[in-house]
Amino acid sequence: MPSIFTKIIAREIPADILHEDDLCLAFRDISPKAPTHFLVIPKKEIVSLADLNDEDQAIIGRCVVVASQVAAAEGLTGGYRLVCNCGDDGGQEVPHLHFHVMGGRKLTWPPG
Ligand code: DGP
Image: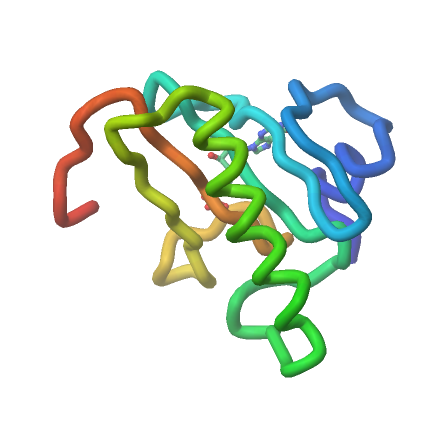
């Protein structure tokens, strides 16, 4: 079932896009929890981490590399956090796998 992120990939709704390639898209989170907060998503409609299989390895690897490269381009030299919420208990709201990248302030641990 297509989610709001499918519409962002298709440019049916606007987003502040930071990176795009064949496998993934990075764009700023609409509700930032840190001075810099962007999402990296696979273009493939994968609901969550729980739905991954072996053939998705290159896609997820690419997402993590893009997270690192965009974080560098955003100037997150002091570090940042990569988060992937999975399912209800993990706090996932949008049913399209996404990595949050948050930085630009000192982040606390553990998250709630
Ligand atoms: P999660 O709780 O892990 O499913 O996080 C979903 C994130 O997606 C949340 O931080 C807000 C963001 N988000 C939801 N809808 C939109 C949207 O339409 N545009 C953008 N840019 N971000 C969105």
